[in-house]
Length: 112
Image (cartoon, rainbow, N blue to C red; front, side):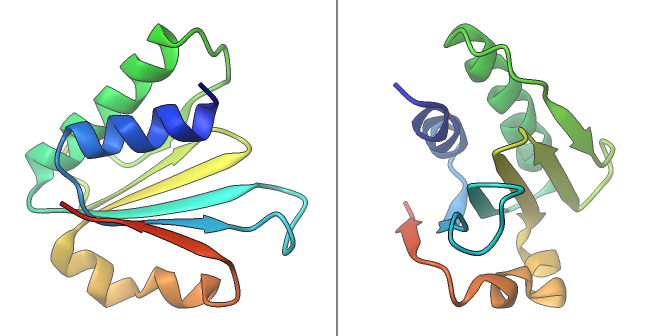
């Protein structure tokens, strides 16, 4: 299983909403995918971030995992070098409208 699938599965396991995987390989050499997902509250945001770290390690990937955001952050960024994950508490995602930056990228959508 490749890293992207492990990441998507880890996000969906914790019931994230409106998950979008943007394929940015044609736009930038710095990352392959940007994943944006919504959560219903801070606790779910943190649970998904922790699940990402756990599942990536369990799958045997030794990629560096950098996180931005604290336990009370409504936006958590997980940087896996080739994949960048943005976890937003639902209302916060609407404020920043980050998805608008990637409208030119092919996108896969997942929702429960």
